[in-house]
Length: 449
Image (cartoon, rainbow, N blue to C red; front, side):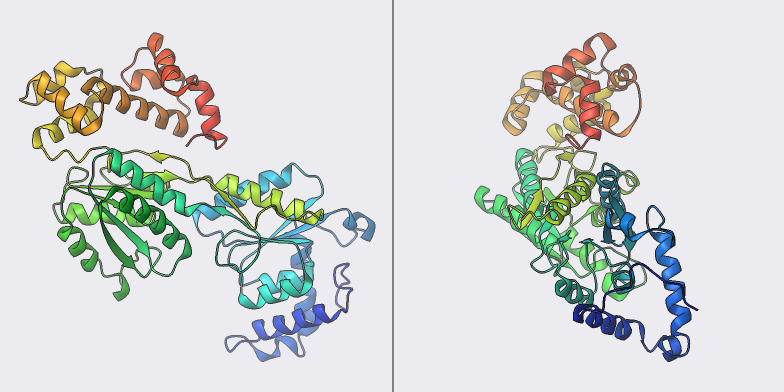
């Protein structure tokens, strides 16, 4: 005899419609047609057991309707394979942990219909569910929040992708590049938004814009659609120096590797910036990949806050809650300027490689056969700062990275950046307005990348 379930009581037309969609979804050619015949009761009993065990916290069958009525059951439809999806889930979990009445249930897009029928949630946060699931949710009129642009007319808690393109374009302009290039993923709304922002900066500055379209979100070996040769040829044919904005960090890493194979110097000839700031990817290539930091945790948290407001009967002030991206975490792949002069490029490369070793301008002049007045004049013309200010900028950038990404004591951070302990806190606070410890706390709370 199948177990009873406190969730399977309504017999409304909407419920029956969802049930029909579930049958059609799970009765596929790859599955036995007997699933919904003789073994129907067994399958349903197993599913009820699965629901009880996967609820968080687990829900036992001894739970009373009165106790369950105090809970808000939140169905989360986010594929957890991508690292940034895991970060979104972590942010959502942080929001749920602040509320005693929230119960989260995770489901992939392949199990969405199952979870909807059996668990009957009070609200849904979705990334990219099945089309049938969207129709079913609409019939039930559940409060729903989407995490991506393409999920119809649902309230959105997402990322301002256009702003990402603007940030990268402006950074390239500050580095004096006049040829700007971008790699986009064809047909992906987030990628097209980044293109729109990037192109607007290039157009307003009168720069030349070069575009490359790819058909996949990530390169994978052994597939004809991912033959790297067209991209490598495109990189070779770009005018140099050029700055390239890759669709994401996966493609940024691919660009650096193709440049290395094709004897294109990064960043002197071709600067690269990605997006997502996936540290594992950014650090696996040489030079390391610069990337835009994305507040994925905050997106998950704000999605929870938006859904909570809707479940209380509130209406979103705007159909789109778009969070601003962080700043660019500058690493070796873009830490240069389009100087147009080999001696200046050599001087900047020396500063970038040795600034944290306690060097000054005299050490730069010993490495490059130019006079001090010429170097200062060229730095002011191309960078709008002196050679000494450029050394301080590189040190400060390194300090920010160490504070954000490691647990090194503040004293050790200063020493690794070539600044003694007595001066480090003073110099850092003058540049950022915060002490190193306060900046570290703010960066880990999402205030600074």
